[in-house]
Length: 90
Image (cartoon, rainbow, N blue to C red):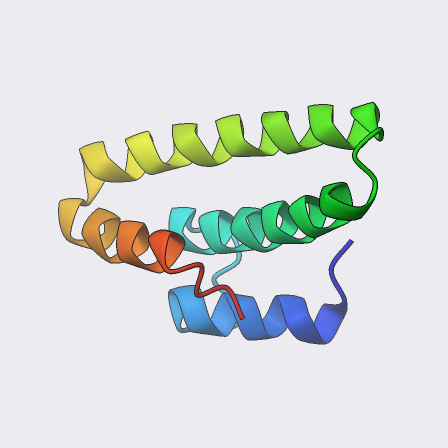
């Protein structure tokens, strides 16, 4: 679970407006932050299979959002892929 301040910071970084929580860019940013956090946890606890399942589900959700963004807004998709590749979450 992300803290409120960190979540607000991610929303501002990825979408630019604090009230824009439903945009695809914001959702991708929040999911990327959660993926990073779960990945760090799994580095320490490699036998935690329920967290691994959650990680796989989040990666699939982010992939679907990225495909949607590619279809609807190609310029934003390019920006998002660079941010995700660089793991510029927070």
